[in-house]
Image (cartoon, helix red, strand yellow):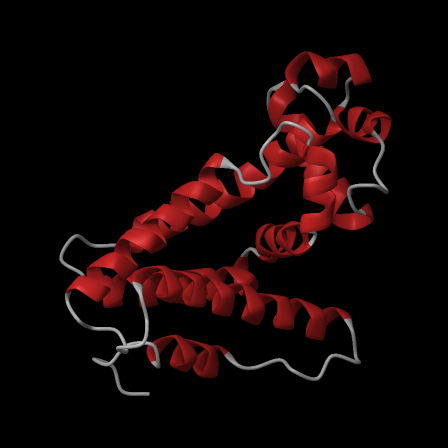
Length: 200
């Protein structure tokens, strides 16, 4: 049987996903996890702490999948494309994780309002960002990027494309009125267009 922390995070993930952060009460998380509110607060500072723990676990899953496919002999461009492909594939085979990330990344106002002195970026999210930054710096040093891009703008562009495409898929799948969904191949070609060494 999962330990209490795992049960709380699993319950919170489902409830936050179904009802949103503000639509979920800690007593509901506690009931679903088979504990009391005091059981939650023995392990987590507050409800926001639970949200960030769930968010961190979602990014940990992404990083685990990414780390499993990267090979030391890959070029930085190949590594970036593998990461993009892996994350896009997770939308199909681990949709709850990816949608949770999409919802909470897009809900930055909630994270800022609730954070007080706490971070709005989890450690696992930082790990992902630093990995992309490192690969972009290597691409720039090897002169594989379009000349108008700096390593920072390349990194921001790649992350923005990934986030925008996933958000488009999420909105398209959850609203008949959203007209801008693009396919995986077009999305990857958009990433490829940032590199002079790749044909689109």
